[in-house]
Length: 210
Ligand code: HEM
Image 1 (cartoon, helix red, strand yellow):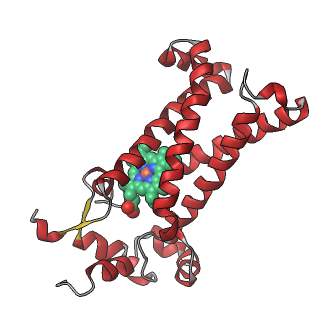
Image 2 (image 1 turned 180 degrees about the horizontal axis):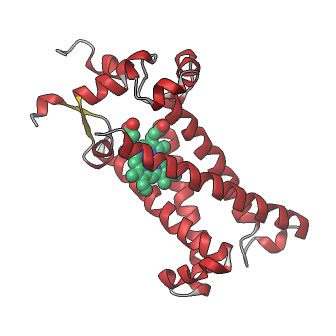
């Protein structure tokens, strides 16, 4: 494909940031599920046994949170919801049937991506705060038992929502053909941009030949 046909969507540092968070997420989901229910305890083998799983999980969690702060500052401005987004959400039938020509033009992200972004932000915050409160042996002893119990519940709930959200995120990344290369090679085709993110396409190609 000629370079002329490609548009830069993510820089190398944005992509490294995304994949650092994604790798941490996979490790956290596996180690977290291992600790969540005995039926999944066998997953601890991946981390060197039960004790290592319990020791490593919170440290990887802190790394993911710090990594996500970087993503937040990079992407938050593109995820502000606007009028077009409410119209987009009111036309989910057209979204599912891929009738994109009928939808209001999306900016860098569509309303679905934006909503998911904010779900990730909220669940990340709940996970880090509740995670610190249940972190043995460092912080948990400073909290009342009732607080720790509530934190355990919130931690599991936020993790469940985040895991389901990321499953949708991964599905959508493959469902919309040509998206994955945005996060691997950093570029998308002009056709992809025009079809899925018309307003963003117009913005980035302004003043240049289309
Ligand atoms: C593990 C497999 C994953 C795959 C295959 C994947 C794939 C992608 C792709 C292709 C994009 C670009 C979408 C676009 O430019 O329109 C993207 C964006 C993004 N991804 Fe992922 N991702 C994964 C995991 C994660 C995880 C674990 C998180 C966070 C917890 C995450 C957060 C994001 C965010 C915040 C964006 C920017 C979208 C926005 O700001 O609305 N991703 N991802």
